[in-house]
Image (cartoon, rainbow, N blue to C red):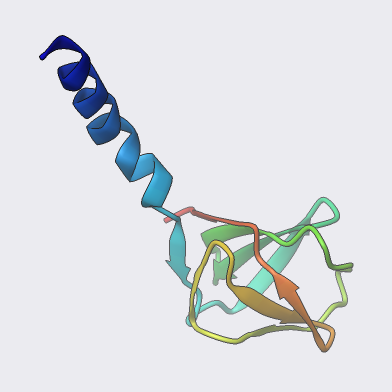
Length: 94
C-alpha cells in the first residue's frame, strides 16, 4: 500500500497542474500594451484582463492584433499584423 499510496497521492497532486491551462475572455478588451518584445497585456479600459506571451511573432506598439476567438487559452492562435501567431501562455489578471 505504501508505494501505491505515494503514487496515487502524487498523481492527484500533480494532475491539475498537468492538464490545466490558463484561459481568458478577451472579447471585451479595449486596448493593449506591449510589455517587452513578445508579451501583450490586454485591458478593458484601465483594468488589465490578461498577460499573453506570443514569442514567435514580431509585435510593435503599432501592430494590429486580431483575436480569432474571444476566449483564448494557452496554445491558441492570435493574428498579429495579418500573421497567425501561437500563444504560449495566458495569465489571467482579473
